[in-house]
Length: 439
Image (cartoon, rainbow, N blue to C red):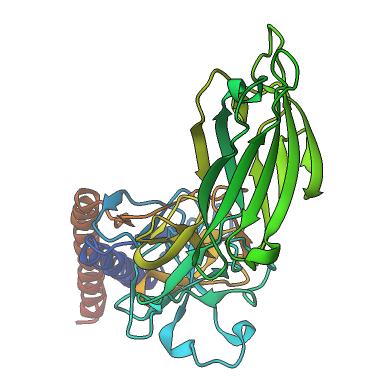
């Protein structure tokens, strides 16, 4: 009967608009929630097919479907915490619940993902939010490099742990030696006095050591200059009786075009000279070190000009033992620790999680999500690679709720709900009239 179907359609309309009202209220309630993704409600009609031209119509009604628009991005809001993290673009941060830290293996931990979070260290140094979300990442090796990790599983991910009391040292591996030697010391009648030079470097344990250079001129026995020197290198970390790690004969050019630059380097003892890079391969007490003295004809390395001995450009990497002062995350997802000696070391890389259909993810509490058959399998990307965006520190992602639009939808929903209630009231009156026919 058409009147009965009208009653059912009115009831369906009330239920559908009640669903929409619930989603609107949820959106408005979370308008200030960082990382919240608004819920969208859509109506779909239900049709009861009738014989064509029968002149009878039965109302099918309406039903509401809701979906969370996870692929929408909220505006980034700056903050003062270096580990307030958001994503500029596609991708999510891998996280787990703190209660899952005790799981036997990383593969057993239920991986979740979120688009933003305010992470701080707890009593054990674990980076987590106030709601108990623990940030996951790939730990770096001792030299700051990230090993090759699996991308289609969470087995390589570990909780990011930062020990605020940790210290670290960075051994010297590369040194650049820029020194000018006096050309007049190689001419006939010169004293032949050697020139000493001491350059500090840092050992594997953060100790301060030095390379002791001795530049001895070869005095010409005839008129003019020999332009030849002997360079001896000693390592203070070794036994003084056997601490020579290299001896080299240096010959300098005296031509009009390349005067004062290296003409040749001959190894007498120690590591070989590479003419392509202009470096010496030295073996100090703590391991190998590369010493750059300049290529043949290079004015930026060792030179021989005029009558002054002058260190012009001596640089090195490495640092002594330092205390942790700051931890930040860069746009590529690398978490770097800064020490009071100026040393910066990579300690973790946070990959970005992406799925083929973000809107198919299952929404959980605290703006977290997990994969579902509708979302597809996840893949771990380096930030900025593939479809993913950049990681942003000192920022949070705001809610995607537009309060003005929600209030407008609220008015429309209220009117639609009242209209459906009016339909039910009208059907009730018509049924009452039908009942009164018998009287």
